[in-house]
Image 1 (tube, rainbow, N blue to C red):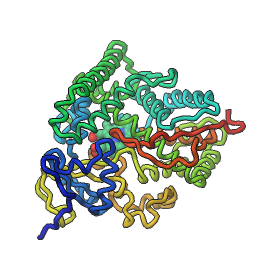
Image 2 (tube, rainbow, N blue to C red; image 1 turned 120 degrees about the vertical axis):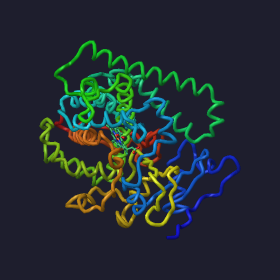
Image 3 (cartoon, helix red, strand yellow; image 1 turned 30 degrees about the vertical axis):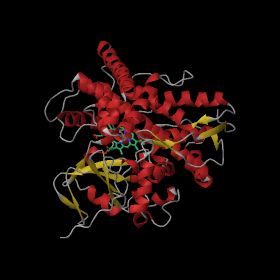
Image 4 (cartoon, rainbow, N blue to C red; image 1 turned 135 degrees about the horizontal axis):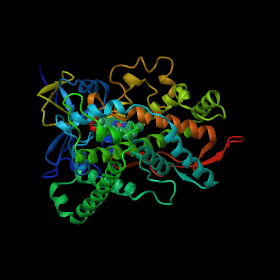
Length: 455
Ligand code: HEM
């Protein structure tokens, strides 16, 4: 069987295709290159070959777990400095991944909403106090997501709504993720020469590990035997397969992993969602009407969650349109042919380029560039082809926090729409994307007003 050639932009001596990637905004480079070179193209980046796949046919084939698996390279390899063999950045086959995965999957499902409501009501109070002031959407959703994970997963209060500045951990993490992204798209030599950024990075990582170690020590000193949170599961749980417990070091890496993986993703997704709802006022009205029909002005309870169907699909639609994670990375377990057409070497890093993939007109139709939650309603979700929606990743390495975050996002949206009338601070705002490890709308601001009678 012949193999088709894979297009590649022209390379430069020593630098390969580094010049084709904007280190400040790698996703935008990949979207642009996909427009020029099509559904598959090849880049030579820092002495490794990267293949970028951007349509359904190719990504669907990459989801065949007999032939492909997650690749931890590039930015994920850099983030390992912080999260080592925690779930997100563990190499395939690393033993601690299996132990942590088997211990944590059963405890990671949706949980009671009391602790969540505790944090969300702090945000609502803060927004009330803001009066006519503008709210930077992703800043407040970051505070919310951080506090929710801290409290629900580890019983720790970051108290991000009680001070003008967010907890130092938030900035340390943002800096480490930004630096990891830059390191992954620089030459090794340049990284070695940047001594100041390296030592600042080390200091941030040290401070974050120290906080995690303190949280663990605090729980060990004051056990909470009745709590079913993730920290207890990590400290007490045994792998059903091997009987092993997690080491204190691995618990630290997973703790920091949940904060990394869980706060920016949730915050970016909620910010993108509000951008779309406000740019498309008919969708905003439908979502708000759903809240009014389901709960009116009564307190939102767990039993209401499954009834917020339009809101759930609006969240999925925002994730499809542009989620906070731009790529999932794979490699072939053995030499193989991708989609029966392209020869693949196992050493190649293959990126699933999620934005163009989620806009492939063969799956999503000619209106793929329109924000339309209705596309998922009335059986639309069930009739999607296999592997069409990958905003939460793929296979056994897919998002372990999906149930947790879906519940958190539905509740947040319902609560905000119940209490407030939201509007864009600048109605002419058009979407600019801010990139760290994740994507979010850059400087997207809203204003809120209490709805009459919704105290
Ligand atoms: C993995 C997306 C929220 C924890 C992933 C992956 C994606 C993803 C795409 C796969 C990454 C890869 O293949 O390299 C999202 C989105 C979220 C979200 C869009 C919110 C809207 C969360 C939350 C948590 C979390 C709230 C934890 C509290 C994780 C972990 C992994 C993961 C631990 C690694 C799983 C493994 O490899 O075993 N997520 N995530 N995520 N996510 Fe999420």
